[in-house]
Length: 491
View (cartoon, helix red, strand yellow):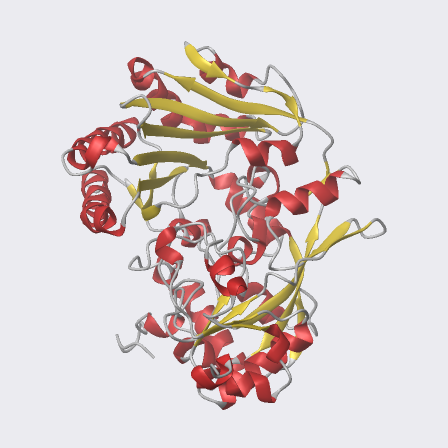
């Protein structure tokens, strides 16, 4: 007779001993493979010893205490959308999968929503739409709640209300010692932990519920607008000026994408567009809509419906690198040029040109940091930026790990070339690195600035003195890897 899975995988014994056997998935279980297959990027799928699927904060606490007592390495998974290898999975360790903690409950009295970390944003929007409300969530409906919010979270309403994390009222958190606390801005409500969680990643505990402010929003106007590469010079001009445009018209939103499309074997320019008040002819969008469009799906719709229109394709091996620079037309043009060079390099290696790229520009006007300050601040450090900026992402999507091995250093080098060019322009590079777009090698936390690094370090030491989330939970960006300003040494 075959032995029981728990005998073959002794790392799970500590979880069985605390009564979580029914919540475990082993490699021999069909549910294990099914769950691994739901990671958005093929690169993120690893081989954990087992997966534990808690149903409540109490079960998260039991699992965490058991793993800590057994000195067992683990990862924490929300939606599994991050392409960064190891961010929400672990080779040979235990995955705490929060997918069953997926509640969405709207409270009309406080106009807030309580949201489980394992939920995806499309389901959040669908539930809140019943009450005519929205939250500052992801624009891609398949993104998970926890990773998005703990990394900051750029939403369609960021230019109105700040980052997703700025709209969190409180966090229910399981600390490293198993305590379950509620962190909020109240002086007696773990206010230091509350601040550090707003962009600080997974350095402090496991969030089991987010309470967020909601806004009234019945209808929006938006969709996808695509133009040929002949219009790219105009697209560059519009994208480089859009941080100023959106400062004047904060209800209009454009994500500009220069992309290689294998079905066309060509590069095109596209935009994801949303006007959050449902206004058809917002002056902030007129330049884009005046371009010769080959595809135009803009219409009156709902925020929920837009989450399906802007989905990134799953099941690719991905390479992502990000940067932030001043909204200078020359820098944007250089980024488009470098993206074109990357496409040509990938064509020489990948058969039948079966790959995709994205060269993405998003506005980062200074007014977003002002919204953050009104909401109590966060630890991402955008208040240090001297100018309006552009959030940049360069990504390549390949079919095989071998193709990713070829593409990865070329994507990284391309971003380095763009940053090198931006350095020749006064104030060209802005220091911030967006956690949700970053490769695992990028120095996210240090980009927040010394003052915010110190906040994160002090809060992590206070609530996790044994460094559980630094040593046993290796995925993500760790404050222990950031050198101290005084000593130059990591902790």
